Image (cartoon, rainbow, N blue to C red):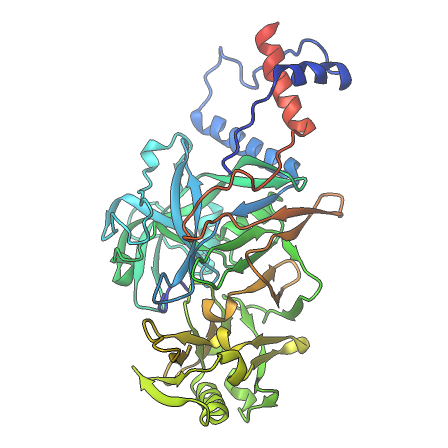
Length: 502
C-alpha cells in the first residue's frame, strides 16, 4: 500500500585451477557441445525465449541459494520516509530503484512512454525508464495469458477496451496512482550460495510497465522508479518465483531505524531464536493479523475487541510501504491518553499539526512507557519509546527536545496499518507457506542467518549482511563476502575452456 506518508568483487578464475579440476574431478579432456535447436531449421524467437527462461529457472533452482536484495532509505519522514531496493530488469540488464511495499502485490517500473513520471530524484539516485523494445527478452502479456486471468481475480490486472493487452490501474492510500501494462522479462538476482558465494542468476517474471503516474508519485523530491509489491497474490514476484520452485515461499526483512537507514531483504527465513509468530487472517488480500488488545506499561487498555475485528473495511495490516503507523480511531485515542497520563508530570505537552507532542530534557527511554500490540497466538509486538515517537527536526536546544507520537488515526475508519515506524529495528518474517508472520527486535546492521528449504526438505544456512554505507544510499561492499569457487562454477568454466581449446 505504498505511501500513506509514504560487492563488487571481481573474481579471476585462474586457468591452472580449471585444469586442475580436469584431473581431480575426473572430467573428460574434451566435451562435445550440441545445439538444442539445429541451425538448419527455422525456430521462432518465442520458442528460444521460452526455452531460455525455463533454463534460467532451473539454474536458479540448482543454486540452492538465498536471493538477496540491497536496501536503502529510512523510516524518518523528515529524511526519506521510505525504504527502497534496486532490481535489474531486461536484457541487457538495467537498474531500477523501487520502494519495498508489503501492502501491494505488483512490481512495476516507469515505462519510456510514461506521463507524469519524474526524471530526477532528490534521493540522489539515477532514475531509469523501462523500454520493452530495447530488451531482447521482453514480451507483452496478453489478456489470454493465464497469469493475467489470475490477476483479474485479485484486481491486480484488467483487460480494457479493444486491445488484447493485460493492463492495470492502481490507486494507493495517499491518493496517488499509476496505470500501465504488463510485460514478461528477466529479473537478475543476487544469490548467496553456501554462506560465502554471491552469484548472478536470473528468472523470468511478469511486472508492470507504467505509462502514467498521478499524485505524490509524480513528485521528484523522493522519487523512485517504481514499487516492488511483496504481497501474496499471484502476480507478486514472491508468488511467481515460489510457484516455480525458484524461491521459497517466505521472505524476511530487517529495516535499520537510524539516520543512515538501509537494512536486509532476503527471500528466505531469517533464523533467530526469539522470533514470535502469529497467524495471518485467511482469505485476505493483504497481510492481515488478528490484533486482540493493546497494552501500555503492561496494562491492557479498555478497547472493545470489535475495534480490531477483520472485515472488508477494517482490520490490522502489516505494510512496509507506509511510513508511520495508523490506529483505529478508538484505539488511537486510548493509546494517546494512556501515554500522556504517564509522562504529563515530566514533560511539557504541546500540539503540533494535530499530533500530541512532548518537550523534555530527559531520555525518552527513561520516562516513556512501552506499548505492546498483542496478537492471536500470544505474540506481542513490543514497542519501545523510539518505536512510536518521532523527534521533531531542529528541536534539540540546550538539551531540550520535542518528541511527537508517531501513531496517526484515520477518522471514521477502523483500519490499523503498521508501517515502517514500528517495523524498523526488527526482523520480520513473512512465512507464506505456513500462513504466519513472525518478528523479534534486532540490530539490523548485524548479519543474519537465513534458511531456505531445498528439494530434499533440509535447510541450508547463509550469512547475509546489509550492503550500505553511512549515507543509506546503495553501495557495494567488496569485503562483504569471502568469495570461494564452487564445483558448479568450475564445471561451467571447464566447459568453456575445453570447448575453446579442443
